[in-house]
Length: 425
Image (tube, rainbow, N blue to C red; front, side):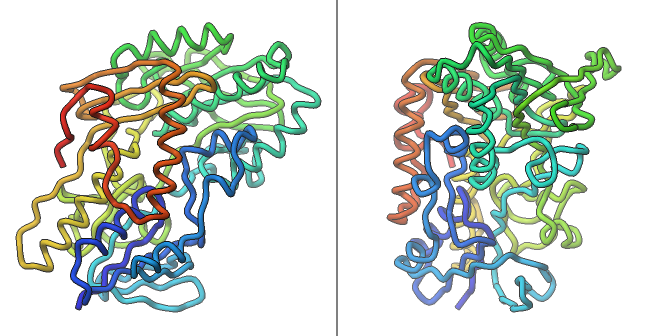
């Protein structure tokens, strides 16, 4: 009997556990370990932050749904990983042995890299967790009584730019509905070298289309922005030129700000010798397997993916939901094959597919593969994207409740968009 332990119960960990349980013979055990006892659908956090969703609509308790499928659950954070002994130490001192370890931890949010940033003791908000989104909404309700400037964007080293654009347009749409938009100057501040870069070197017409949308919504922007510090009501950023030299200093006033941070690997994972790069992201081979520890696999935001290109201010490559789910599926198939004595062959896709809500419309982009040159480089906008994202939210949460492990993108989204055939695994 083998014991497979999945650390992390998010967009990668829950599907991985479900698929492992579905594919493995009953004598093998699957356990999920997560720091909290709640699954949260992270893509809905921008809606939570403006009151369009409540926590109860975008989260669910983990244990009952996993246990219905015969998957054990431990609701504790991992304090240390002893890769040589195949053992986890949990908060409180308990230990858990494994034969295979699947790391889907997500990132550590590196607010500390910019003085004064972050919702815990700093002056900026985040929508990276549902708790952070709720904190923004608490301040947003007060802000609505006495509006003023808003700054939204992404810090140096950030890799997840889609939600920053998404949130800027969602806030704009909410303020327009409340007849308050005219009282709120908005600025989008980003480490991207140009609008629509997205950490991907641009996708199709993303630059011109997003610039046009920002202009049409009267949102100013600063690109190549190296945010250096944040004080109460003021964000400081150095705008660099294409060669990385300082071009202009910005001191931007705000009454409310949401700035996505750079990501790093979580401490327990980053501390394992030979497992990670200097930022704490897991180094994997083409089969999602650690290069140093062959019984450790990893998927999602916690894996090391090189930037698409060098930029004056550091930017990372995003890991979108489609990519994460195919990584998780590949891991499940490869562990099953190893246990059966077969060579591993399954690979996750390096394709980027994203549906970004913009309040009452939306933008969708597809980069196949993520790293250029690409077979497909596609960016479109329309009200259908807003509706598609709502539908996907409902689908995915239902999927986590029912334990269905099939990536929806392969069967529906890609075919519906009319872009490609079923994606290769």
